[in-house]
Image (cartoon, rainbow, N blue to C red; front, top):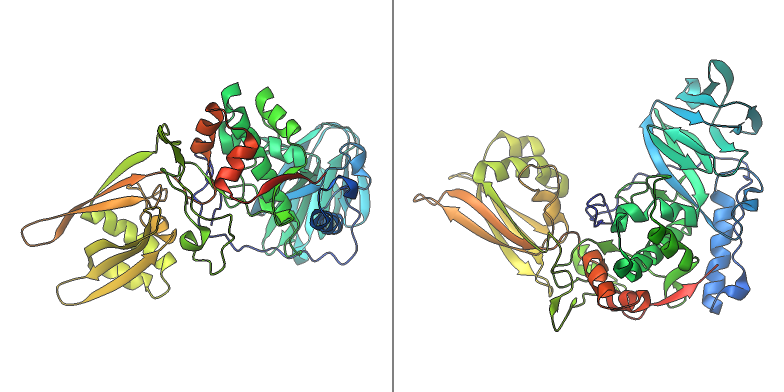
Length: 464
């Protein structure tokens, strides 16, 4: 499930976290980028303790060449999964580079295409051009010149690339300093063409993206990487064109994270709240909710802050058969008791109705009645699963949000003929509303005020 919904539309559809875990099987202690977080710059004892823990985790887990910090001092590293499942990958390596296969170092003196492919016994076979380089369990690549980038599938990636053989495919990880990572994230998550009036919202987005990544990098080691490069975490595109305004936002907030109780906060954001955000406990069914992840009214005397967003209000219309096809495809994935084959074999949509709403007006529980004149079954959906099942009419994207009402048209025999959904907002509705934050910035709110509005009780703290 994707936890981030982007203004640009490339972020996800936030919902349930995907559970693909690739377990690192490195037997030896790896030499890593050594980020340093000076304790004297942390603002509280709890922050210092957390910073020390983060340093230990990253030092133990980040893949990369030794002493890499001569280029990026004091900046923690983040490991981004940029590809997984491929049988082979082709990397363009302009300039001089080093390949480390397990513990064997192989210099690449000229610009050479490096091919890494799954070999026998679950190892990785490496060729530089037509030359055989070696085979091993872990492959790392980095340039010996600053600001060089690897190219893969038309995208450029800085710093260090690490490959692990997992099952029948490769996991490719880009390990890089956190501040550089943000430059590949912000254009996707807040939009690249922002004006000076949007600057405080862009700063707020930079702080949230940094906090999210640092929190993921600080969890106990369970995977070979910290975050995905897609909407399952934050959309990262490697080295891309970044406006001066976005660069300035990253620079001016360098080391700033959102804290609650001396620890980095859980930071979620979405495109458009529709006027109200909602508590994480209601959207994702969590039994213990963070007090700062509660629903807030996102408006002032002039109206909802996100009212200028294209998806502030929207409508979707389905013929009954259209919605039946969508339900047959997606309902089994989100309802354990459903036999997909049986659902596809027969039956009709007999009824669909809202049973319960959340304080924000979002649908908390939806009832779907399926069957025919002789037999029928009732399926219940709750929270964010609702928009995962009720896709848009083309079936390629989830419903924009669960803030909606239903109109069901029936013929004289009481068969459903058409379903109309009148909705508002886009995304899961938890945390920061990006369109609302942009309007708040244009109204004169600074980044601190924007963040405290969406995450009550939190504060900004500099940890490096």
